[in-house]
Image (cartoon, rainbow, N blue to C red; front, top):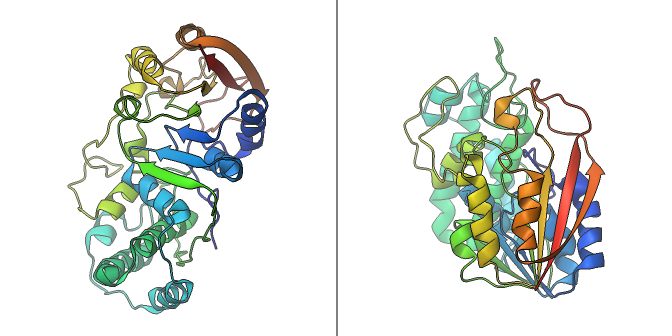
Amino acid sequence: MFSVHNRRYTGSKFKLADWITRLIKEYCVGESFFEIFAGTSVVSLQLAPQMKSIILNDTLEANRIIYEAFYSKGECRLNLLTELKDKFNAALPPSADDYFSSNYGNKYFSVADCRKIETIRNMIEVKRENLFPKEYAVLLASLIYSMDKCANTVGHFDAYIHSDCVVDKFTFDLIELLDFPETEFKIYSEDANELAKSVAADIVYIDPPYNSRQYCQFYHIYETLVRWDKPELFGIALKPKGRHLSDYCRSKAPQELADLISKLKCRYITVSYNNTYESKSGSSRNKITLEQIKEILNARGEVKSFSKTHKFFNAGKTDFANHKEMLFIAEVK
């Protein structure tokens, strides 16, 4: 079974989660936690046992369905899921190409794996009316995690690894079922700056996009898989037109962060960021400076800052020395 962190995701805080949560528990007091750019949700996962309420938000539909699968309280029949897992793996896909195999075959996945993935996705949709909402989410999330394990990429779908023959590797497996009986989870898929107007929590954790790389384009295949809208694709990387393009990946990022911080209803604001300012790749360079973050947070309260040396994501063009992850904690006036 897959755990929450068993997924390749750019900017994942899995290796930093112990450090981040230790500092939050040491310097913040509260029973509700709001992760407004939740991504992999590993920080919320670690804090969940100590919180009465966890609020998760991410504009990606694929991430929303993953949160529903791991954290929602709905009914879920493990025996049924196990039975469907066996049926999915035994299913014989058609020999003719369809959307996945026509577009992604021998690129992001092998042709045979594309056909299996599409067959399973169609089977999930056919069975949807007989599934509880959480079961439907678990099956889709399990398909995402199973695809991630065999994808012919460096961890995202901005490009694929060019090869004469992509090897068949796909097997469908289930995610683990989590249980936090004392914790209430609320899940959103909305613009962070808009959501901040209406949602309150004791502690807000912010881990925004750092550079020009758009997450909706990095994980476009999973967005298509969840939406099942089969959009027209463009370019060598076979991407659809951008959905939920973030202003945090553009030059107006400092203004967006300032606007967000000004709207937050909370006792503590915590912000993760790193110092990728001297990257050889322009798309990897930060859109907001550390000085700007401090200035923005100082407007709301006293700020403490912490740093930790951390190995950065490297696809071949982002090498630089002295990389650090930063955590800012502001106690709101």
